Image (cartoon, rainbow, N blue to C red):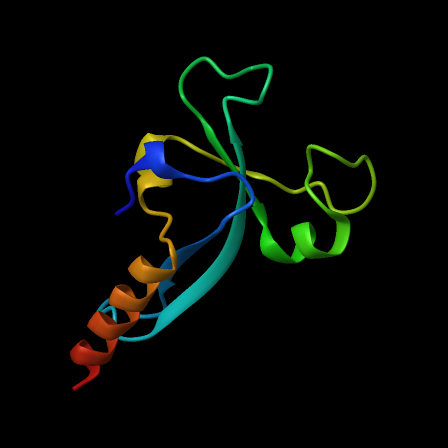
Length: 100
């Protein structure tokens, strides 16, 4: 889990889910952090992550009106589950251990 106060704008984060209940086969999604509480309807703390593919192809959702506009809005619990590269490495090592 990440400390949500340490997210850096435009840094890369990862969401790991699993293809199996034994958590042996990870599925990884890549996101770029674009900001906190940037929505006009935010009534509680909300962190925004743009899929990395969209960010790479079209730039930040905050600076352009064209292209893929998909953004993931995460509450604090969901935001804490976003991993930086170090957290991703630990998660992958743990999954590898479970496959042994």
